[in-house]
Amino acid sequence: MAANLRNNAFLSSLMFLLLIGSSYAITSSEMSTICDKTLNPSFCLKFLNTKFASPNLQALAKTTLDATQTRATQTFKKLQSIIDGGVDPRSKLAYRSCLDEYESAIGNLEEAFEHLASGDGMGMNMKVSAALDGADTCLDDVKRLRSVDSSVVNNSKAIKNLCGIALVISNMLPRN
Image (cartoon, rainbow, N blue to C red; front, side, top):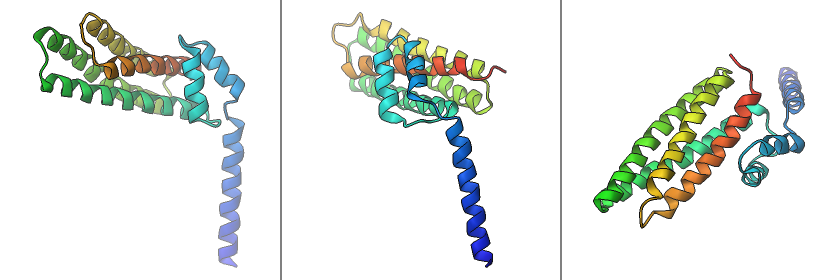
């Protein structure tokens, strides 16, 4: 009898959470609206459609930040590897500048997570914008090199696109 009551309470709680969660779900139309506001809507739609069924706005922001931070960390490690592997002095200077930009970007993304967790869309926006600037600056630094590591360029472009998605979402979150 007690076990049956616990099961009923658990099922009732689960149904309540599913009902609440589904009422805040993002529709494909809303995803299109988000993507239309980015600089690369096709990247955004591909990213959102392959990653998400219908999350709420905060979950969408968190997952987008997760993907951005993963790419930034991968790029940081790749830059370290390039520098440690030995490159010409001019390239080393450009990659070192990128490394510094990505170190800052990773810190800014960590702070963006904190702002998201506290419900501060404006704070998240400022930190994501700073991370985007870091990727953009890195691209500027390496575009003058004769030989550029393609993964640094591709990841930097992807980070800019992911930051663009996160910026649009942050503008939809409450402002503190």
